[in-house]
Length: 280
Length: 268
Image 1 (tube, helix red, strand yellow):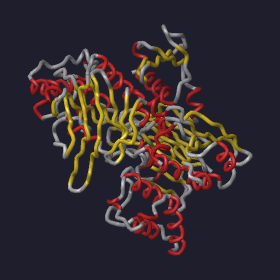
Image 2: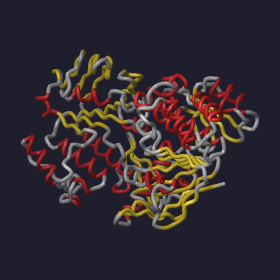
Image 3: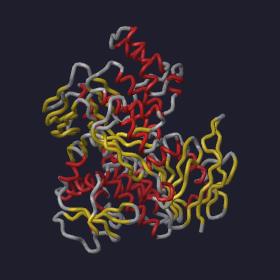
Image 4: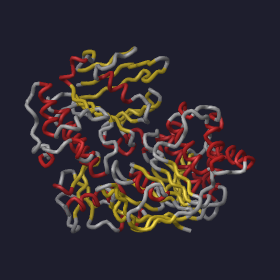
């Protein structure tokens, strides 16, 4: 069942089109990622789905009906700024949010946050703060969760822990829409919608997007001026340790530019490389 | 030539922002410092370029050091060309030479068409490219870039990395901080920081090699030493023993940094 559905969703702000004809859906138990740079339109899309912002055209549907502010009860939302009170403790924040939704506060022990129950939000590490915001957003057990850059600024372990919680929540049947600017997090989503300048660039699962795409790796002694030559010939050169990887040129062209001292190898492309070759 | 930090600590009031951190930046190499918010990346940059005083340890840097702060360093009310001319003036670069160098750099960074645009009208990717160009303009031997790629789209990120690689190719020692582990995987050397101290350091190969125990892939969670990666789990086995249903896997940098954080957590 499609829980969240965006259909030709568009939003203008004073002559600027922040979101331009975006369509996608999120089913129950699914994690869909909105990927893109700052300013690509991810937050605006989320705010329309939340009913906080009216679309200029197109529709944002929630369980088959247009999203309204009154539907907030059906949704859990973690904004980029987290929406927690820094001067209240973790348990006070959760009691406040639970009170607003008229439900019992969630158990901090179950969430693995018992050790910080009486610490003020401002005093705990960012990764833990993000965990608290996630628990707060889920306290009324909504069928939909919208997470705006939930792992931004968190170290690798904190990020792995957050994703674990997100996956577990999806497995219980929640539809989850998550935005991120970490390309490496695309693999955590069933499907991703990659956005640039308000539009969809590409969408699908990571393996669908990467498909059989290839890139060229160069190691060893590279000829003088090879870097400039590869660029001039239309290749995109990526650094890779002490070697390079090239997207957009075939192995013969790369080998020619790199010179006889270099070893050139055709390798499967990464998600980022595929994305770059799709956009350039 | 190489520069860097030798067992440096930086203290603000009663907070230890950086604790006995060493970093070697060699000419022609890119050293990447990776960590989340509060890891100490900005403090490390500021200590390295001399903006923050160190409580102990030694800092070495060449007379010519280029620095791009986290905020990009671009003046919003100046045009792209004016930003560069201002920097050239501050470094007292001969106007003729500065003009030639500015033209050359604008071409390499593909900012030629944006020459007369105001700093605040640039996209994130263009602003960061201009910031790096400003840091490179004085022809420094050491180039320090604080989170130049945060929030950028992948194409801008790749373009910026190409430009950074070119700066290293020209013989400069380059230090770049980032929150993205996949960027660190492309570096000559990596320094992973967490709450001001070192989680892992060395070349990517050496860091992976030095990881204690083994990492397995599994379809089920394996307690506190496991974490989710996409559809499957990673399980760290400190003594190398095979967990139930575990398939041995070659860890990547992200796994190794996670293991280092788990190992640290276990000692607390």
